[in-house]
Length: 262
Ligand SMILES: C[S@@+](CC[C@H](N)C(=O)[O-])C[C@H]1O[C@@H](n2cnc3c(N)ncnc32)[C@H](O)[C@@H]1O
Image (cartoon, rainbow, N blue to C red):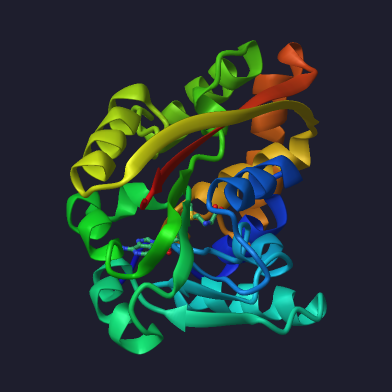
């Protein structure tokens, strides 16, 4: 696959993308009654934003992603934190139907998908999870807020104007965060036989300009990342566009859509 999550973009992703606060991990553990005996599959794991904190709560996490550089960065982070029960596997949603044979039927407490379902075919994925997940376990779709340039604030509007001008294209993709897409996920989960539940975690944080620029770089396709020599100019242009709107407060809304098998 060439999704663009490679090279330096991966380092920006790891450093600047938000992870998930403990309330999110607690909500997942509570919903599926996860114990120290459970195995969790984190699909579209990136560099371990969900997989790493989940590994501290269960017996083992299998972190799956089609991008080798994401896996390599995640593996390094887990080693730095001496987390021994996390396996990093190259794969995609289309590999899920083969997993019950590998793991033994109904052996997984949960399959988590953080900010990644929009890359997958959810109509085929949800039915494929049913033979994998134990009773009481399920699937969780976690959406990590809205993109920096699609938020309802002056600085975010200014960022969107700047980026649309820079890229020469409108920026409308919500990466699954919009209500229409969330409803489609709910319908498709219910159709596969899951008991659907929706909850959310909300919190506020304030970003600085390096975090905003790093966040932008983390969202670019590797082919579009400005060359290192051009980055100071890019950062300066972002500063000029956003500074009148400081402070850069973000209200982070994290919907957690879960489907449970009873
Ligand atoms: C925006 S990142 C999310 C990473 C992390 N889960 C998080 O919450 O920050 C999306 C990830 O989904 C992965 N991905 C893309 N297509 C996929 C697919 N078909 N199956 C599994 N993962 C996929 C990408 O390689 C990328 O690492």
